[in-house]
Amino acid sequence: MLMARSVLVRWLAILMPAVALLGAAPAKAAPENLAISVAVGNAIYWDVFVAVERGFFKAEGFDPHYVSMSSSTNSTQNLVSGGVNLQGGSPEPMVDAMERGARIGILCAASARSSGLLIVPPAIKTAADLKGKRIGVSALKGGEMWELRELLSRNGVTPHDYQVIQIGISPAKYAALQRGSIAGAVLLQPSAMVAEKNGFHALLSFWSVESYPYPVYAVGRDWAHKAQHGQRVSRAIAKAHAWLIDAANRAAAVAVLQKTTHQSHAIAAGTYQQMIATDHFFVPGAKVDLAGMGRLLDAMRGEGDVSGHPDPKTFLIPASDGGLSK
Image 1 (spheres, rainbow, N blue to C red):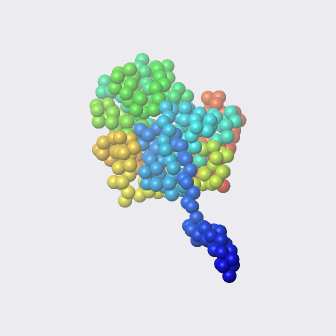
Image 2 (tube, one colour; image 1 turned 90 degrees about the vertical axis):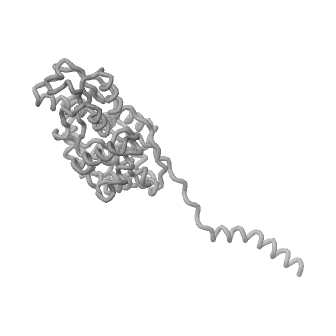
Image 3 (cartoon, rainbow, N blue to C red; image 1 turned 45 degrees about the vertical axis):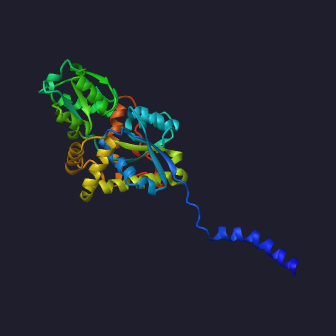
């Protein structure tokens, strides 16, 4: 009897931990790293700021963090090399990288057009006053340059009348404008609004130019397919668009921009009024405008950067992996 009881005790000692494990709740998977390359000083990435601050990426199982960028070209290089998972920026360097064989693709978009402003000091009254002057841009090739040339040409100023220099993202261009090293700068919000508050003024608006999706968000094609990364990221960004567009979230949206860009409440609120309430910058559903992508490819073909007549869809992540387009 004692021996049987001893055997029973030993079996219970073995079985009890297993029974306890069966009854325990399954361990929650650790969130996946999501390295995001965007310019945190630019409000065009407000949708990503919201997805981070409101927990939309977290709800999809990600642990998001920002990786600094100096330009869309630099950001694209980081994506191609695997240094980041999600890149925001101008689509031209992304298309160029894909033309060279990079396995990346455009997942979704913030807007269907550019919102840049040509900001100048008080002494510049008209476009003609820029003749012989220097203008700061983000890159010497691409949409910003094309649109700048078109806007100035409409006002009688040819590309031979001025000089452009590459400086980088809007905060860097505004600093150069303040130093007086340039007579004009293509700025995005909220840098443009800060400049206007400090005596500079908007000479021309890119909003009047028929444009293309900018910014867009790109990911690696293999990464998008694995573990439904693409589907999860695009869901989070689309949710951020719906949240931003809802006027009921205005105060909270202003707080997100103020926190992320380190601007004053007045600047953040003014940026909301301009970009969201007036211009309706963020497109519903974060969808890439295929017609706009077609215009971009036509322009790149004219510059010799795209060969043939590729379908815009070839540069997008497929819908099965989260790609959003219309």
